[in-house]
Length: 61
Image (cartoon, rainbow, N blue to C red; front, side, top):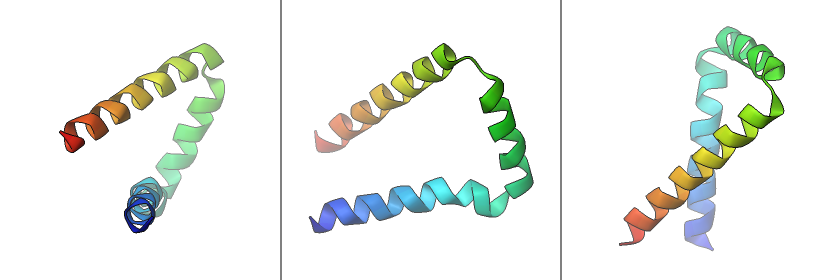
């Protein structure tokens, strides 16, 4: 559980960094995301999940 909380905390730091460092650019990015078709967002999310699973697999090896 301690490892899980550490990983979750690091994910939150990495996710929050762009909003802290570049708030105006993040607003533009969110506007662009709202205009993208849902199918493109689903594909991008799926690719990111596969990459994440691959990284976890490589890290556990």
